[in-house]
Length: 334
Image (cartoon, rainbow, N blue to C red; front, top):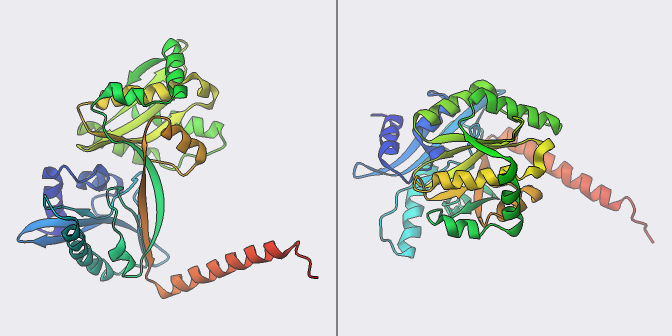
């Protein structure tokens, strides 16, 4: 079997591989022929994997993040139990092999966001890679719903009470209705949707066929759709993949009510709930008020092409020079 066949088999039996790294997800969002995987094997057992996709632009080949895919990167199978020192040595061995294989690929740039469970990027640093930290927010345990809801802020609880009086919660908004609603609500805010309907319906159909995703939405008595969520899940976590809120009904509290209801729905199906994070201040504040815990995750990158690296260095120099010149505009020499 080749690497992808082995990885398909692994994903069917290994629950710790996050949904965004599973073979069926990559087949769906990338296309069957547009992704690959590097493997670390020992004694005929796969102990590490690095799935990735690529795009080709102006003769340059770039490993990058797939559509609507929060993270993927390296997955490692850990022996249990394992002392901390041996764990780090083990990570170095697994990642070292995968990085060596990565370096042999004919690529111009590498950029991948890793799952927040990946916390040790030192082997990448040693090989000249860069790292940028992002944040997501996660409710770590949704098994005790009363405790989860007790941790909601006063403002979130108030939103729910308000919404319960006017909003009817429903499931299974069609792919077309969800997409059109998201497109329309973004347009009201002067924004454009960043994914195509044909891409969305592939994802929608794939998760529904595997009982790994569902839409939930809220309407009022006049049939107005206030907000909707498209949530996917695996054995470890649920993920708020796409949220849509009509700005005309932003104050109804429906979005908060939907979060509570989808967490109730996921209780018993998975262990956690990931809001998929945001670096936007107002959005971060909203997620935090659900009692979610901040989780850092890494964007790891490297430019291999000398020409692109030279261009990046020049752009960085030009940007720094512009900042310096702007800072000197009002400076008066004495």
